[in-house]
Length: 355
Image (tube, rainbow, N blue to C red; front, side):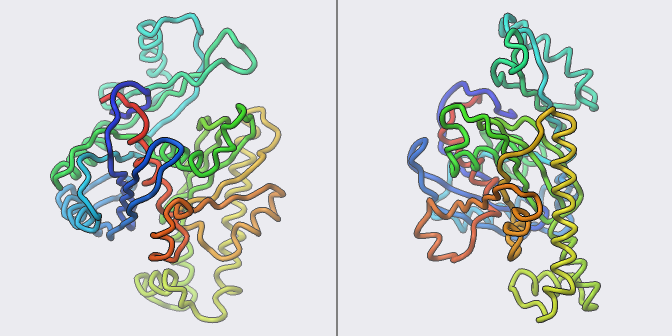
């Protein structure tokens, strides 16, 4: 059900992204390359429902999803959702290009025992052939993705209990990459070999990925996100966490917060991103990245894009899904970075997938 391979039929799906702070949904209409966003909605994630990316309380999550679906202009028939965090492993491996599909499946199954640190009877496994390896054209690069089955089943149960069947469970970073490509099509035009880093800053984590020609070839997860900034605000001003979060979200921080709290946090954030770039380059053989894409609710800090570009000496892009949703852009009047993963899931509506 990870739905990596492009086979089967098309379904109109609502993209549902389970976050630690909010659950987000996106609906799209149109066709590949010419779509529009019809709705972006979110509800608060019930306390304790998601811990370490794992859905702990299906009933609470299901009730929240029922509220979420009521906010949509029309009820979607099917949902596409994603698993992420430490419950997901993605690896790129190389295999003989002459293998038949049956031989390839058997080979991946055997290799997964070495690649995946979970017992195989506890995971759902999928793979996608990316194309010939750049240094050895006789071998294909194959993206292998595995997720803990209980992580998948929890999300599926919560959505189905809320009244919406699940057609696709994707990998969160792959969904994010899909939305990046939809908003920055130049990344795949003319078989671009530009090395594009993607930095998604969520509430409790920073996900670093690297894309080449629209394919995600590298990923790394860190426990660092928007909550770190909230904790700094709460500590510096002796505020309760919920009060600090409201002040942050509503842009009502004390006047001196920019120097006392925001600047040190951004410095630390840039250090995390720089370290991720260095780790990728040292392990991959690439000398540098050509572009950095920012995403996630934690990417909306004032001045972050400019400082990253200055410190890393790289082009930084901050795509906004609302550029293809003029009406929503007017109504919501905010940058849509936090909806990027949900958008990528909704875009599965335009991609044939194995059901």
